[in-house]
Length: 272
Image 1 (tube, rainbow, N blue to C red):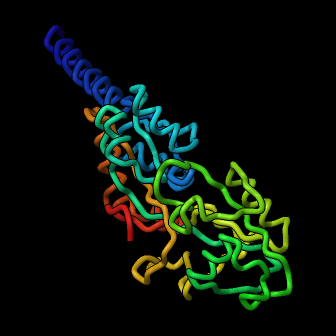
Image 2: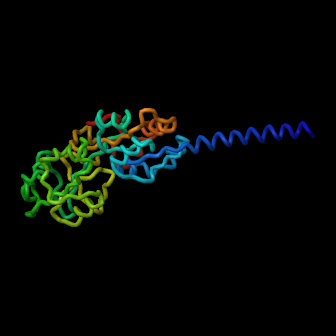
């Protein structure tokens, strides 16, 4: 009887201890804050990410690149960024390290009633700088062009600054949220705006080809599409094992379809 009890207790303790170890591994938490672009890309796949990494990834509060920088700098966890952080800013973040994940095409969007299908890079830049003022100058209707601009992350390179440097833009309307960009372009027949591909909504916008290249084409950058933003993770200088595990998984081939589903191109580089 004593032998059976000892065997039972040994088996119970083995299962119990194994259960504790598994729970602890699964309960490791990585907090990600920052870019809506990465949030919208990963949100449908969070269960898969948690299961594959055995890490509880908390990406419940998306925001902007400033939120990403703050999260890393204050020791909160990992940052999700959609602009390139230069060496000086990374140094101010305590020596943070960027992990490039993907390149997101920056779409040129117009109102659903606008029948213009294609613009050249030069035409886009002339429109945004106010040199082209009417859609009839680029094959459209006789209608005033209304330039809508979202100048977020002003000090950082990339994103809308791949279209034009800040000082050359001549917008008619400035917005501070991507949802406002979408609704403004949808409301004004002459409007033109810029949005990342993860925000593509065929019911709300038409997307213009640039130099004949569709920004939603999987080979968009191989074909030379000019407008983009890099999506990256910023990890602390001394990341936890869980943070490294999550970054490694999101860089891996297993995560490729997370990006392609949102017309984002998986890439470990910062520019086409």
